[in-house]
Image (tube, rainbow, N blue to C red; front, side):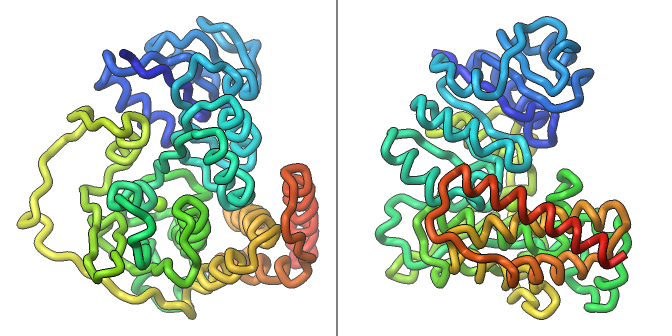
Length: 372
Ligand code: MG
């Protein structure tokens, strides 16, 4: 039987690669809906090719060839077996909750869902019997390694280290936007690429891992691994370490997430060769240079509304950096300043989460304009 799937964010980096995976497995999937933002031109090409029943975009009047629908309507449509949430930002959160409430499995590529509301989303998924399969390569790796979480001693998340791994703090301070966007291993969207340069992305992944696998923060390690071949690992209580390896391609984790628990050849381009890779390096992250990682661990441990504040402040600061309004290191200073000002709510509701997010963004923008 075909798996019925909808994709939120079909024109983004993950969405496009998911459609490449689906194209290779035409007898495995039926696409119910494709949802995009402003790129209606590409969405219309996708509609022509994949013939979804429904489509969604910020300008629905420009959609050709499919019935228009909203995010919420897609996530309420129980004909879906699985929804790939591949939008970036907080717009992924409410539709994901709707899908979970409707018993639809989730392939999760949206960071904010767990960073902002992991304490709400994970218990809800458990209650509804919904599977949340992570798409991010690190969490996908851990998902593949874990058989029984109660036997796991710790999670080991790998980080490529980004473009500034072996640069000095000064190089990093004076980095231009194009230097920060020159990621050595992964080709991703602009915001996540800047987060990878500061290692905030890894920090967000630590918070996600905490929620996804129910692991305390002191049992989640980060290790720098520049080759991006070991996508992450777990250590069992008896000292055995299981790692997942593969060539750095997002097609593999995307395919795993949407076909789980089955596996298919799909888009695999070449066979894995240890001798071709020849060596794998690992090192401790430089906590002074990559202060964002430290901030994320602390925010995660604080919990409640603190990661919401951190995420909003960081994102606004990254946008300002991309517009050349601030320097790379200012992203961290600004995020820290916003965290200092934040009054924590221990168990925020979804509405409170959105309210805090909005308020922090306004204040972060004010802080940034006061600097210029
Ligand atoms: Mg990742």
